[in-house]
Image (tube, rainbow, N blue to C red; front, top):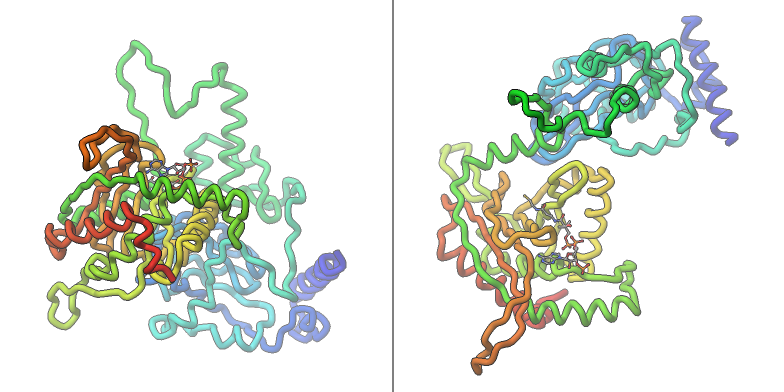
Length: 479
Ligand code: COA
């Protein structure tokens, strides 16, 4: 409380000081800001390296415009990489002088994103991270600190916390908005002056426009029919163009790249009876005595993930990726020692594939716990780029929804993927010819047939089967 009002006073003093354009001598204020050095010129603010191998990202929307004042941690823009969409926040307070890209353009990692007039004083270590124009290529590491992708920034000590959740009046900036928001208002036929902005100083954000249009349309639509799905009529066919969501857009790009991979499909029926019994026993125990990480239940997936990892130890080719040797331009296989298993997840915003890292070092309980963590972040849209990066093979359990067989599509930089169908109970013959109850589940593998031959895939899949059908055999391999 004290800190907040103290900071507000400091902010007002700071702004007054700037508006008076006095010589830069204000030691008291400088102390509040914990500053030690000064920057008087406009600096290019570089796009950080936001994940392994990502060279460029699409600018989805800007939250600022030229001449807008930004504070430390203010959102600058949202970018979409191959892996995820990320909000880029400002590390500095200052005035935006130039946006280097329009929304929809591809921004290069390590190149200037915006020019910012850092009018205030900055810390020595931050000053060191600033890059002179023209040095962009050399200083990607410095750039990482410049425009840090920060999904949920926590104000640093000494910075000015911006009050949250206070209802914001329609301010003098209410009609100020980014080009993307203005485009949206045109698309939805909304007058920006009518919209109450919830952004800084009452700026109108995309969500405000959507919310306004939704309320307007609900009020004026007599039935509750969703506008995107017109009721069938006896008139002529109508076609409505709908923009792809960010996740669909990403899926479009990733899957189009996957088309270059010749897929080899291998499917097998796995007897889940033993695993099912073991899971019931363990869940019975966990219900009474939760595991250290508060885990009270296991699904089938952690066992399957572990079985896949143990198989990769015997078949490392399935954990590799295909690349091109820069010297010879010939294709090569890049082998990888860590088993980073991507898990396809169905989330409210669509398909997303977070990664459980270094599975060979985890036991079943820690895999389950990591799975829960990622699942919970995914359903809240809170996954970070590290959560989504570095996958070496993917497992897609579509069977939790339904389906018997699946033809899974291999993800770029991987050579194999496992699709799991729905476990069902069937009558089967035992060794003595008696009819017995069996629980079975189909596993469908896709492998990159340029580098993985059918026999290798079949042998590896049979090793996975052996582990899953006899889960006790996994125990001796567990750490
Ligand atoms: N067959 C039958 N039942 C299954 C199953 C399968 N293959 N997989 C899971 N289940 C059961 C679980 O045991 C659990 O039942 P229970 O409550 O009785 O124990 C229930 O279904 C729900 O499981 P879930 O919460 O989904 O856990 P999970 O660890 O099996 O899967 C996810 C987690 C995130 C992978 C899963 O929820 C998901 O999103 N799957 C969809 C993946 C997808 O969309 N793939 C397609 C990509 S193109």
